[in-house]
Image (cartoon, rainbow, N blue to C red; front, side, top):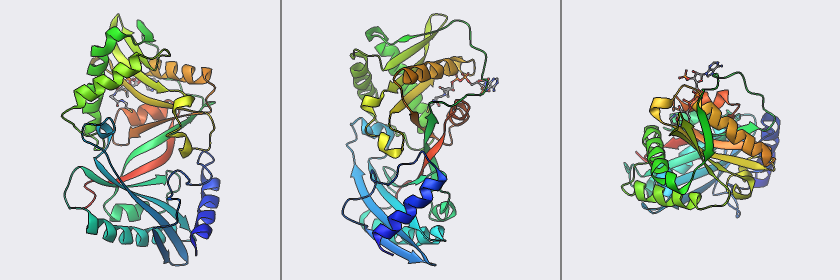
Length: 312
Ligand SMILES: CC(C)(COP(=O)(O)OP(=O)(O)OC[C@H]1O[C@@H](n2cnc3c(N)ncnc32)[C@H](O)[C@@H]1OP(=O)(O)O)[C@@H](O)C(=O)NCCC(=O)NCCS
């Protein structure tokens, strides 16, 4: 089977599995053909391997290992899992040749459409875990009843005077998220987060929002509107895409409806911007965010399988 035949079969299968997936893996596949091609049991897999590296003091380094090896996968035929198994074995040989074992700041990453469950067992067998998802919420999603609104919650745009509070909340969120293995501790995190939030606060249209409970700022929301989501929009077939970058509630104020109030505010902003779908990333093992986002109407679109370090 050649690369085009595999891609056609792959896309045909995905279209029946999940209408929110894009038509082709154009955002992930290398333009100049497959790096790896494997046939097994009448099935075939094409893999596009790439390597990215970011500087330790960059903004990107806050939420990923410094070096990521990624494999984009197209599967075709009746036994896609067997074809993926062969592909992972071939990729592993290439990774072992170019990567030092045991380096925590490296990861091997395979992004799979969440509802295309073929190959999950093979990924586990090769030491990968489902660590994070890109979740989607269509604009017309109805949400089940949540907590009663907490009296005293006031939501307002963050202002320059909120910078210190915003940095504190964001660093708290980072520390919490680092437990789940992708967000990574960096010595310069405070400075980098302060610069990033300072940029957001100097904008005309608010991207950062604060929830005050009885006058104290205890929650923070960061949203990206469709004109700034070009980096993530190709992961879905939807045309107007919003992105919910982060939502954090101070520990003392959790489980009392503040997060729900901020999420409802975000969805109102996205509705006003006529988005078709809102996307967000969350760690699957996060016991707070996974049930929370599910209750808010989000469901997995892409699942990110990680092996960290990339080579053991
Ligand atoms: C995830 C997070 C933002 C949620 O905010 P929150 O203010 O705690 O959430 P809410 O109180 O609005 O909603 C959850 C509560 O609603 C209530 N609730 C949920 N569904 C309900 C229902 N159907 N009926 C009645 N009550 C319900 C519960 O009391 C639940 O609290 P519990 O999970 O402790 O039982 C917050 O916990 C947090 O900041 N966590 C740490 C950081 C984090 O993980 N951020 C997300 C990163 S992607």
